[in-house]
Amino acid sequence: MVGLRERKKQRTRGALIEAALRLFDEKGFAETTLAEIAAAAEVSTRTFFSYFAGKEDVVFYDSEERMELVIALVRAPRPGEGPADLLLRLIGDSMSWESTTDGFEHAATRINLIMNEPTLQARALHLLFDGQLRLVEALREAYAYRIDPVTAAAAVGGLFGAVKLAVMASVAADGSLEQVREAALRAAGITARGLHAVLPHPDRSEA
Image (cartoon, rainbow, N blue to C red; front, side):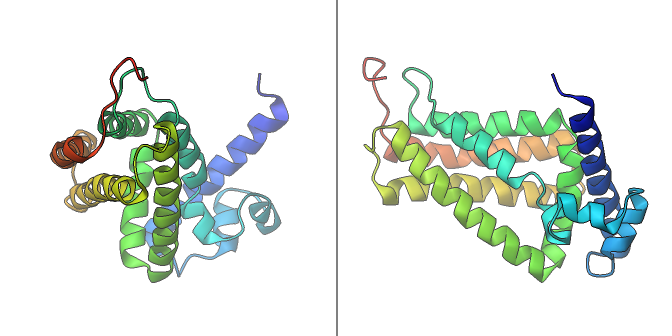
């Protein structure tokens, strides 16, 4: 059970995130100051630094948490589930998670910020490359390294690259939550047709 102190910390962190993303959207990322974010969340600037190292960290506030969830899922394939089907399930689960939280609203704001702020683009690329490399290793580990590094990298890069671009295009076109989800799943399905041909599919007896 989460204690009172922890709940208060979660509320403060949430207030900072909400205030920052709202101000970034209204004023622009570069134009928004840390003092303004803290004031909007009704805390001190010093308190801001108790939660985030800077403005960039607010934009990517859940990146590590999401990556850990993804890695945990990839490391535990279902009996008889091949790599391509596992990656497809990962996409579907990720979209379901997004739609049951406030993540979609935040995602739209963050995508627009990243597309227009060079410093955020650089941070996003770093997180993307690092995350995909971790995912490649987790995928190979899950299948006892029967997948070579190049094949695993091509599968992960191709699938997640297609999904990310589809989501970004749909958000940029002011798509609804359902339209964004459909775009992501469609992109994943198109890419998966090729993945089934190159990734091994274990027999149920091997699982």
